[in-house]
Length: 129
Image 1: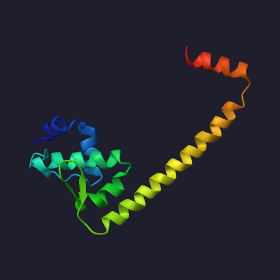
Image 2: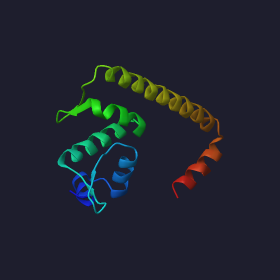
Image 3: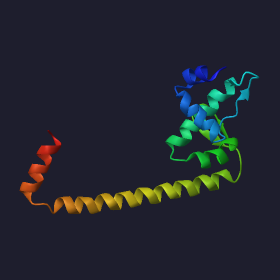
Image 4: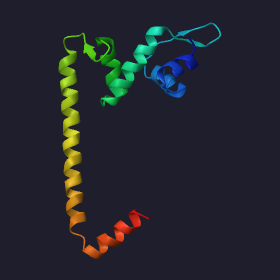
């Protein structure tokens, strides 16, 4: 199938599919004309890529873990023994980032909460306008 068909079947734009190829996540065959030729399995690969991106992994990490995952219909299942440890490390990194963001939000809440009532009232009126 050509790139437009893969885009239609996955809901992922052509430009992103080309980006995935640049990032070595997709490996289409090239016709003599230069057109990319995708196979049905590439639909599943794109879905796995999207799931991993939604889970917070970057394309570099996805490139290393993608060969060690299979799709059981509901979940992505690790098939390489050291992948689970890598995923735990990635989850810990995300948890630390969430903690940092929560601390930043709490600091902002403190600054916002210290504002005089009239300043807060004016600020909120401009937000709602």
